[in-house]
Image (cartoon, rainbow, N blue to C red; front, top):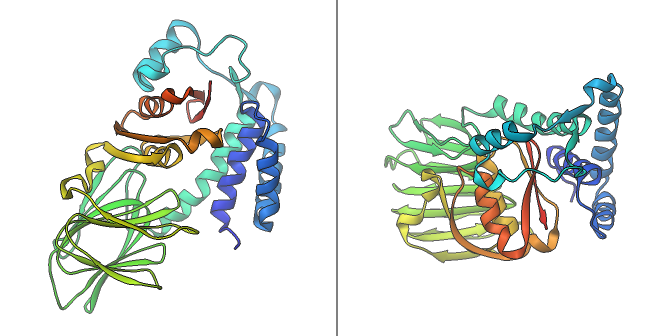
Length: 328
């Protein structure tokens, strides 16, 4: 299946940074070659970003490097902006001490395009790191997670919401004559007066009910969920379902995200909407390790460090807009 262009472009941008600036990994080139060969869209996106980088690199030499701050000024900056976990300065002479602006600009260019398209589609959108509550015309409310967006289509015969990105908590005013539906990646949730959470985090789409009940359909099956029930759909994997304490549903609204025996790669996906740049996982094996805890995702660097440090991982800031999670 061919990836959509935005997905292929983002992946190409990530590979560009990893191959140019990333840590030495014996399997990195093999993984890149496999990605490149997996889909013609990947090769096209890779050619596009290389051409973008070539054009940027033709700028005068003095505009092609970005020096990270050093000394006391650097420590103060990182203490206030990035949190305690980022206070230790990078080693002198580390290959990431000077990051290429060619890389940073090329990455920003490719990541900005999907965001611009999203803004044209969305009726309500939230900023990175911020939660936003919107009151809809019927009195229902939607609380958008950070870096999230919805499109609203209210008609006399029904109320339709599309979750375009991120996550949202809905408190719905009951109106039997106008069904309330939320669509997210081919999964439709129909409401019968309830408070529920819909999330598109990483590759998965999940629905969880805080109170009341909903009907969830994905084109292949239909099921009803009550208070505390959740279901998660992800491409290539079996549908997962279970139950948790209802009060934990929508906990992300407070900036604290509970993670229970999940892969580090999945936990990193929870942090991404709260960080004003790009977070890249450079080590596949590290990403498969299990993690459990409740993380204050308003401090992304600290949260990431707490996740990976028990396994010998670390978080490296390449520029103010890029974090790389890797092994020591």
